[in-house]
Image 1 (cartoon, rainbow, N blue to C red):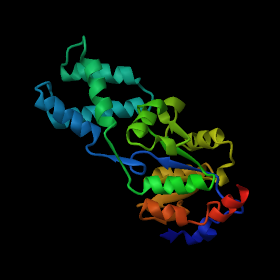
Image 2 (image 1 turned 90 degrees about the horizontal axis):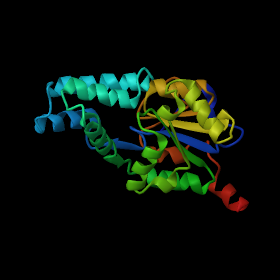
Image 3 (image 1 turned 135 degrees about the vertical axis):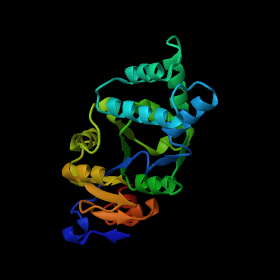
Image 4 (image 1 turned 60 degrees about the horizontal axis):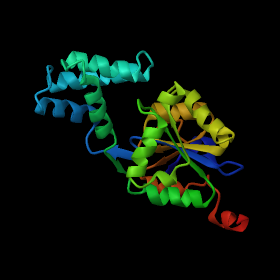
Length: 241
């Protein structure tokens, strides 16, 4: 576990009272990336007019346009179905079902339940800030299926907020929703640009398996997060109770 020396270890006068974790790459990973699983499944079923690599590139391109709000998710599905040569009657709905199924097939970081239970026991509000074509209630269902929904107080999804990481605005939306000044909130991310966006929003930043000059702390494993000197102490929490 490393502490950035240029800012004195980011020790705060008051302990952090909320944490926002990135979704994919921090909270969970996937057994297979959605684009790969979708392209291979379509190819196996003989439903693919394009090669698997072309279908994957097309999906990622359309997803990026949906992220950027150039098109809606429904338009993304319709255009994807058209380019694949799927029937206009049900092509988009079938793609939606596949995408939802593959997206929900998540694997939770094994350190996560213990880390979040520890932080919640200290009175820390726990949230997720995620770039996604899926609204927060859908991601909440994924967490429910994985048995960890009870560990999260809120999810901030880019599709709901109409802004996305690394824009500092989405991090400001999180701090507003938890009713805390940014300097009393923490972001845990694995993407350098996103860590920098959180820092611009005034949050304390933790790099998980990445390195950034804007990261106040760097950890190799999620389990190390609870040992950083930014949280309320267990002793303090017990005294308050």
